[in-house]
Image 1 (cartoon, one colour):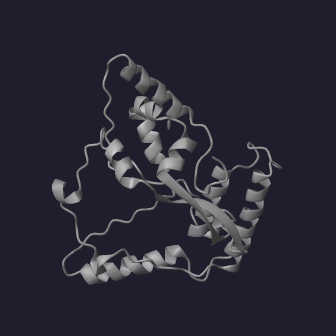
Image 2: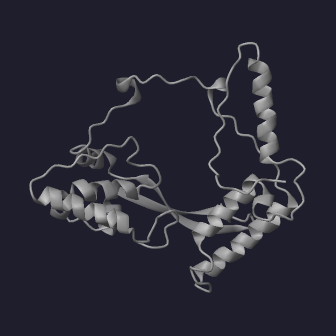
Image 3: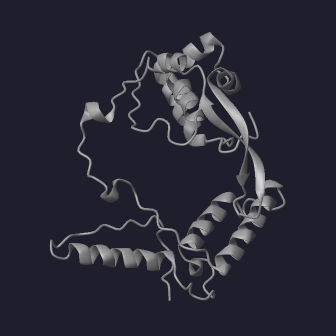
Length: 233
């Protein structure tokens, strides 16, 4: 199946290596346990991947061991209008949108699943102030808008195979885009400081919480998923 947005089509040597080892164990009478709280985190295709790891014999018996056959039975795609990554216009994209024959799929998959929901596990979970995460949006600066357009041009060059992977690739573009979204100076050191950046907004919010919890001597934990970035001047 091709041209489905969000569906990875590249080969994974690590996944194939794990598949060979799992099949070797099962074919020789061994047992395998997959322990995960998120068997489906990105796309519906992950259900098929899990079933192929643990229920390949059943899939082959039903004639749906191939992904396209599985999709025709258990999932649907739809076309929709969505904005381009650089916000320069719109495009028609095909995506998986829902499961079909869900009771039958659940009955098959639960042959290898031991499902426990949050109420059954009874894990303590802290309450979120306001009942939901707060999303703070920062207007994009002219510099970041120009940089995003350059990223879009690079993406088109990669898709049309006009650039070698060792020169430019999607991982590099994604990394630079994330850095630029945090602060444009992480990818363009000579760019002027933004009038108000995400870092400024974070500092303001941390100061706000500090003042609110000062009487109780509260503590804050700030996570940043970008590391090894050059210090800002």
